[in-house]
Image (cartoon, rainbow, N blue to C red):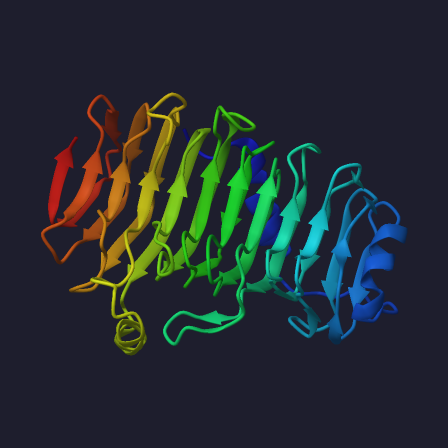
Length: 356
């Protein structure tokens, strides 16, 4: 299906407010940010001055609060042992938007929510969420997740989600509303750049849309594996203008292979539509439009580039480029998937296309 009205309205709003305009008002030091969030009024913008600080657990937040750095990335939210930002049982939360912050992941996560309190209406704009780990040299912070959000209803816009050591840049469980990742960069995370799971034996299948628009994906799955984009367990997936690469930076790959002698290849695959319960809860509609690139440099990638194995239907329009320089399959589509294409489709595939 095309973009839902909710996601389309979000893009319209984001395009109209792209200029980084900070209100002319007194700011708060980062060290006082947690208290400022909990004391904010509906619709308030909290301006954060440059420096280091922490947020920790948010127990209460009014509706429509924006937390905005005075100077983009000048306010650094420091990590620690647990979670840099967390919302747990009993929290009373309105919608909150974090804008222009540099957020360091803590040992467990940069952002953590629990499934018992749906939905979490949290947005991130013009920000960096950084795990602090260099996979090419095996040095840096021992971080597990970037975003670990249950029951999310929100968006990322112009966000770099990067350098998580052990697992996912964003691990999303059973969305509680249509969600959007736009104009963002998912790069060099131990497992996926983004994964959505809607498992029946957990919070269940999500009746909402996961949309990625104008997203760059680079060198994920370089810790314990996993493809750059891994999506399943929801009503629809919408991908537009995805630029995904593996191994484009030869110097990074060379350092990585020297420091990972047990690895036969650098990284894994680009895109997987999955269901680890055997197609019990497939995506109803999977759509790829615009100009989508999935490129693996020669000698890289230990998995199929694009694998659609748990969707009722797949629709493709625009340009689809899949480059696989090895004997592995370039594209795998599960038998029984209903296929359709738009009038403007252009396919450019190097490698095998199989139906399995």
